[in-house]
Length: 158
Figure 1 (cartoon, rainbow, N blue to C red):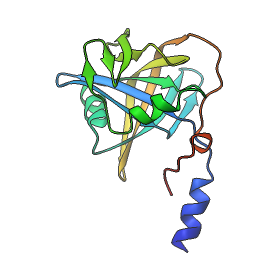
Figure 2 (cartoon, one colour):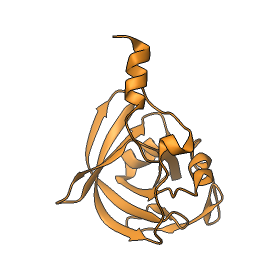
Figure 3 (cartoon, rainbow, N blue to C red):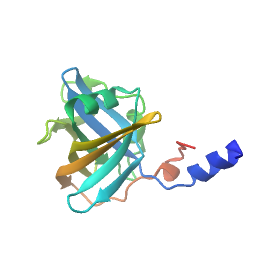
């Protein structure tokens, strides 16, 4: 297999940009993710690929909870602010306000939509872990088209 063809082909998969957040006894964690998909209607399940060496991974693995925030098309700055994890100051994470969701996961105020999950399955393979989460809470604040990886000018994977 030609490694460049593999990389190019895999980068043609379509992805959105999302912010995932969690918390454990060590504090809050967050990061920009793009490997996310709904995997069941009943019960409502999503699967998220989280980089194994991240503080977000540690928090989700320890607490069993996470929130996913849909990044709006006008919010490239939000997506880029979470590339290197999360820094919390008071009620802000990377400069964006948040509160506590029903699971205890931090829920950002600015994204157009969000949902919270409890982990029901975990698959440890490769450099990312697949967390399957049951959606236990969700909200929509406004209608805005989601930002995609390609629209933002980013490439990840391959």
